[in-house]
Image (tube, rainbow, N blue to C red; front, side, top):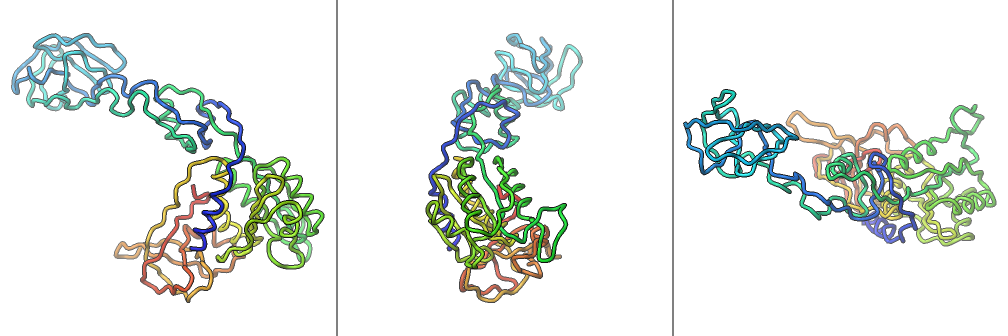
Length: 398
C-alpha cells in the first residue's frame, strides 16, 4: 500500500537525541519511559485472602463440622500461625496465617464470634491469592519506550516507584504559511480566512504529549520561509508546517527545504493529502502538511504520528483496523483514499460505515462528524454492503 510504504520510510528516521530526566510518578502521565522498569517486590507480597471468610487447613476440614475461631485477621494486620484444629476469621486482602492453605467463604458457613460450622469444604488454594500472583520480583512491569497511561502509573505505584526515568518531551515547532491567514480574534479582510490549522496541530501534538513551539504565520515569500525554517531548526526536534507544499508559484516550502537541507520525500499518492514534504534542515526533521485542514489532519494522523513516535523513542504498534460493512458506493480511485465515515448500527445489530456527504478536503466539519476513516485502495470499487477496512479515528490516534 502507498501509505504503508510511506509510514515505513518515516519510521526509519533516526530517533532524536533526547535527554533523560527523572520525574515524579504523577508527572509521568503521557511521558515515554527511558528504560525498562523492574519490580523489586512481589505483588501480592504474601499469600492473602480473596474473600471474606475463614482461613483453614484444607486437610483438617470436615464438611458439617464445627471449629473454634482462634484469631481474627483484617487487611493490614500481621497474623500468627494457625493453631492446629482451628480456623481464623479473615477478611479480603488480609495475609494468610502460616498453616492455612484455603479460605472458606462466609456464605458457606454458620458462625458466631467464637465458633464456625463449615457447610462446604474447600480445596487447597481456594479463594487465596498466592504471593507474586500478579508480579514476581524482578519482573519487567514497564518497557523502555512505553508511553505511560494512568493504569501504568497505578502499576508503578503498586510496586513503590515514586520517580520515573523518562525521555524529555519531543519539541515540535509549528507554523502555518499563507498570506491569506489571520488568527481568530482579528478582523477578516477580503480574501482572508482564519488559521484553523494552528489550533488543530497544536492540540494534536499536546494530546500526544509533545512540547509545542508556536512559530505563528509565515508569509508567502522564499526568504521568510527560509528564515522560519532555519530558526525553527535551532530550537526543535521536528518542524511541522501546514500549507505551501503544493506546486503553485506561491508555494515556497520545497525550494526552501532544498536550499537549507535535504528533501527526502515529496508528495504521496494518497487522498486527501497528496502534497506532503519530508526532509531535514541542519539535522532537524521536517514534515510539511497540506494547507487544507482535512488533508492536514489525515496526513498528521497517518504519517506524522509514526514519525513523531520514532523521534520520541516511543514503542509503536500498528493502528487497529476493523472490517465493517460499507453503507455507500464509491467509484474506482486512482489514489489511495481515506474516506471520513461514521459507524451506525442497523436494526439487525450490524455496524455499517456511513460516509460524510461532502468529501472535499476543505470541509473541516466532516472531522468533527466522523469517528473513523475507510481505506479505499487504488483500483478498488466500493459497493454498498461489501466489507471495507475501517480505522478508528480518535482525535490523536494513540
